[in-house]
Image (cartoon, rainbow, N blue to C red; front, side, top):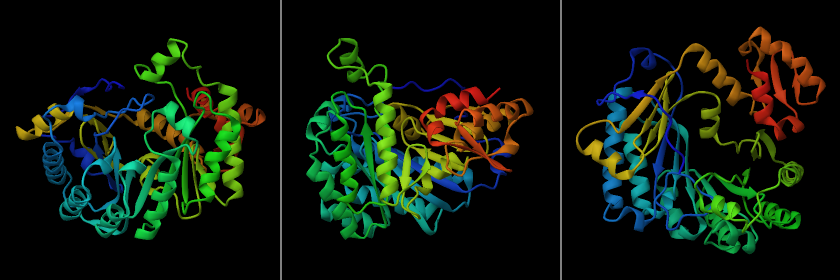
Length: 396
């Protein structure tokens, strides 16, 4: 699993600098649910299977999450929440009443703005029509389905346990339950995946009532089973040219269906954009609940203890679960704006760039990587393929 970053020790009482609490920014909450039935070979998220947790029960986690909500509300005061996102792991491994109970606690402590977006991630095999109806009745408005592929052989390489049919059914169940927005999460570039396989997965978008698609290239993360298989030569490393070709095919197919690429790896029908993720990319405030969860409040980043046991133990002792934090300086925040906002279709305000960075823009325009208006800088399609490199070359 990915390691937590270094930082300064976080106060045991969870307190934040006064300057962080005077910033008036929209507030979102992220709730990390660290449970999975099995660990997929490519995954390096902070998740745990039942055998890895032993006697640590979901009830212990839920008690700790409620306690952290109490802590957050004491520190932040009365700040209504605009978006909530339950991620993992597999949040839908918990009973529906556990998730709706956490949402009710958020509403009670902070208040949800009218029309708040409330999302949960879900693996198709954990869902039923009745479960989704409970979530919708309890206030959830958006479902993000971990579909990944419509091809059984590709799912097998990814070690996903659901069938393509189950994923398609789950999307329809969600629509029938009244979910306002449904997203399909797709992965391209799995070893052995042909272009025809990838087109088959994209065809699933036309067979489901979704208004959002996230498509990410497969990344071989250090320490995962997939990385071990690649190192042993059992499966090939994803090919960069193949990944680029599949990205372009996705962009073409989704655009033809009326989806708009509003962030490098995300497409939505108008009005279907994920407001929670936009809050991240636009630098708004969010508090992350759960083990290993990260937060950003008024220019202060902090992150929780990683293991569910130490996370719950801190809260049981009346202490903040935050392990460390980083107070961002003005240039840190400026660089972060470049990193995040240039990925958005709306682009980056040119006023954020230094004179030396602005001097590099014309050459990037000449190379067809960006377009420049009077006020903003935006990635071209070619620039999206090379986004990380473009940003690296742009920054001082």
